[in-house]
Image (cartoon, rainbow, N blue to C red):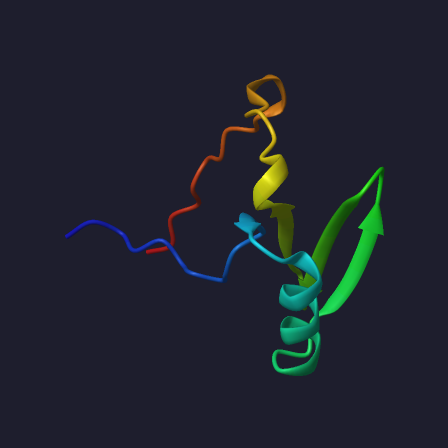
Length: 77
């Protein structure tokens, strides 16, 4: 049987939303997330050590493959 990879959560999740203000309001009031603004017109929300990056649907960014980081899974037996 293969070793199971522990699931601690997501480090970062990038989402495209139709209304960032409404999404931020919902996530802050219902989920207890905190908002971070950075750069020009960029927003993210945090919950514990997890980050949710919000992109507006009308301005979907091009994929940035120059700065990807491969992940080496750690197996626990």
